[in-house]
Image (cartoon, rainbow, N blue to C red; front, side, top):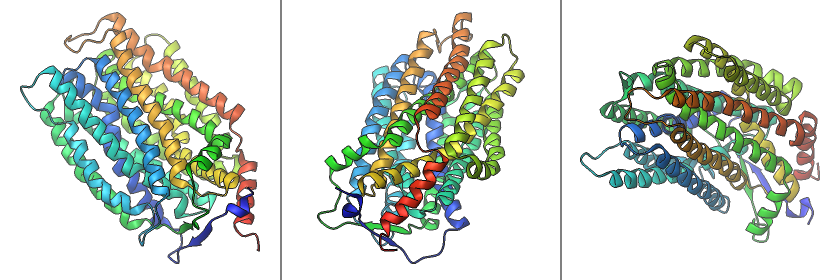
Length: 466
């Protein structure tokens, strides 16, 4: 069936033009998301091992199972949204408003310890609350991520949305990685009461951000289908499997999230135990955010000149080289390690700033192949890959920390354990970033020229009489 015969009717809402308000509103969405997402990815494992006293390998199993469940929840929720009709406030915004309240409440529950209970109770409690939070996270994150493709259809404006989304994430990262370690650790030990204080404060901030995203964002593009045109699952699956850019970006995202989450989880142990300086995590967090803000003004001109694929490929190669250097150079001091690490963080800062614009290109390509505009379905499949990456990293991180011999009851870890932690923190990311570079260069087809051709082709197919 050709594209035109399946093409739904596209409407543009009569509203204000795309402007800075849209970028700021979209920024607030990921700022709210990442207050808890980054807190969980960076500190929940150490909370479970050091306060709940759950074995690290068991935590890894919990993370693996929960993230796989979340991945299924993402696709299910994305499909649910795509078959709903847009309302007066749009298709995606209402769900951000409705589901943000249970999301924040479930996030707080994860960090509440009921005193005097058995080890089995704490394991069960962690399992239930973590899965509950992850499920609610899907109900907010899927509509939020899908919304970018209906805020604007312009590729350059979408790159701006991707940049501002990453800015929101980095602002959250600045707060989580710089200030949270100063609050929750006392003498290099996690403190239960301070964790609760930090979580409640972050919950209030997250709700405020979600409300700002809801109020400031505008969905300009509405897609309507007749009864015979409405998407069906079999047609959607066939289109997804034919979408080579989507398949490639799924592999890339799975790999990157595995790496990024592994870095976040293992770095806590690296600085707390290997360098005996948990508060150095604050400096690393600050520098990670600083690299994003340094890269940010360069993204748009570099993308315009070279293209998204070309820019991110070089960035991934830079990160890989830096982590190989960290692994290869012996006896680095804390300061020397952070100096080289900062250059590596600049590399994956570019990737983070551009990746969401990749996703909108993939959604456009899906429309080109099938004639169906299934923003939430395609985005949820992409999110599925990220969740699988989180699952792998959570499981891998927990298992790896356990395998190198980490023992929370020991004041000082053994030399072999410390060496194992250092290897996980350096060689692992080096290999994964190199793999991403090779996949981008060899298999991802949407280079600068082809994205331009795709944009022109879609305009013609959407408006065949013009």
